[in-house]
Image (tube, rainbow, N blue to C red; front, side, top):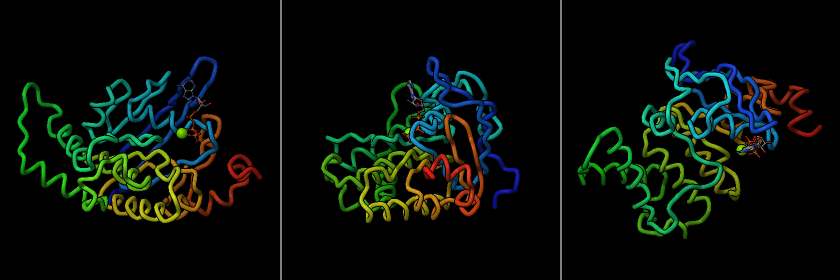
Length: 249
Ligand SMILES: Nc1ncnc2c1ncn2[C@@H]1O[C@H](COP(=O)(O)OP(=O)(O)OP(=O)(O)O)[C@@H](O)[C@H]1O
Ligand SMILES: [Mg+2]
């Protein structure tokens, strides 16, 4: 069990300005190891911008990001991935013309080769074992030879998550994984997120309230670039401020 103050990620006064717009305003945020935290908030609240700064895709205007006690504010995205911070985009990011197997294989090879200079020879057997394990994990073993772009949308999302898994993250950040999915597909992805959570910390941005209330033990609510509430699903559901901005009441 994680101890009470085993903080895996912290942001201090983290801000991002796009010209005159303050997309993220001085956000202080703490995430404990082993949590499955949801971030919710209306469109444009700054959720994607916030996690993009954590993953290193966007540079903060000011503030700090601490991961496992280390200041990573200035670190490049691929170095952060190497440390265990992996982010899946709001938009599905797979090689549509390659097979499911090839997609996962490339991601695993990327991890195996990272940090090694020069020509790197992969151990084919080890590679195959890892790819197969991930395919099994995401339930796409039977679709291994299919072209990724021809998969049903929900399975493309599972593959997308599989590619993140191939990097063996300690902190997995999922940006609206349920977007565009049918109800039965949502159930499938939810089941997978729950299973992944057994081994890693998850930060989940999600609009679907039902999903959030079911999955997360703690919810952070953003609006206009700031955190306006944080608490258990019950606390958040009962929070008047949240109801006003998020539920449009
Ligand atoms: N690259 C950019 N350049 C300029 N403005 C941006 C950029 N990225 C985001 N913004 C603006 O910053 C604000 C926050 O956007 P962000 O995408 O972080 O919101 P979000 O909470 O993820 O919204 P959604 O729920 O729609 O995904 C919005 O007003 C958006 O238009
Ligand atoms: Mg977003």
